[in-house]
Amino acid sequence: MASAVRNLDEPICEEAYLELEKQTDIRHEYIDGYVYAMVGGSFNHGRITQNLARKIGNYLEGKPCEVFAESTKVKMPMPYGRSNYVYPDVVVDCSVNKAEDNTLTTPVIVVEVLSKSTHYRDKVTKRHLYQQIETLQEYVLVEQDVVEVIIRRRRSNWISEEFFLGDSVTFESINLTLTVADIYDRVQNEEMADWLAQKTPDANNG
Picture 1 (cartoon, rainbow, N blue to C red):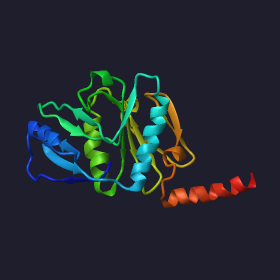
Picture 2 (picture 1 turned 120 degrees about the vertical axis):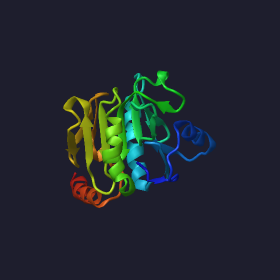
Picture 3 (picture 1 turned 90 degrees about the vertical axis):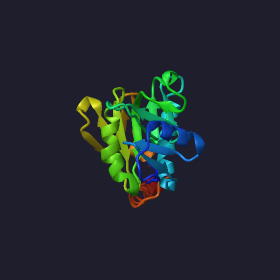
Picture 4 (picture 1 turned 30 degrees about the horizontal axis):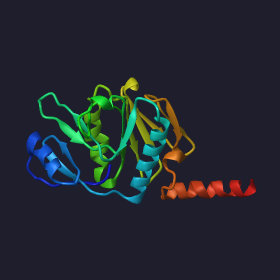
C-alpha cells in the first residue's frame, strides 16, 4: 500500500468520511473511525502494482472477474454497524455489476504492496479486516525493498505461504500462475539486481 498518514486525530462517523471523499481528490482510508490520507508510493511500488494489474487484467479479458488498481475502495461491513473502507493496491472482484460506485464489497483477491510506513497495518490490522470478507479467497502481500511474495488463503485457514525469485505463484481463485520475476519486472532493489546479473551471462552465452 502507498504511504498513509492519519490526517484527523479524532474519530469521525461513516457519513462524514464519505462526505470527505466527495470533497477532495485525495484518497482516504477509514479504519475503526479514523481517517488516513493516502500519499504517493515509490517507483518500485508503482511497478509492482502495474505489473500485477496488467498481467491479471490481460488474463481476465472475456471473463466475469475484473481487476482494479489503487483507485477503487473496498467496503468492509462490521458487526457493530460502522463499515471500514480501504484502497487495496490491486483487487479482483467477480461481482462488479453488483458493486456501489467505485466501491467493491465482494473481492476474491486483495493485494497490498508493502511500504515501511504501512507494514504493520497491512500485515496485521488490515489482514484481520480483509479476512472477515466472506468472498475473499486470497490475501497477497508483496515486499518492494526485497523480493518476497506472501499469500494467505482461506482454504488453508490463512496460513502464510512465501515465494521468492525462481518460484511461481498461483492465484487459485482465478486459476492464474505468474512467476515472481514477472511480478518484480523492472523493480530496482538489491535482490533483483543480483538476479539480473546472474541471468545476463546466460543470455550472452546463448
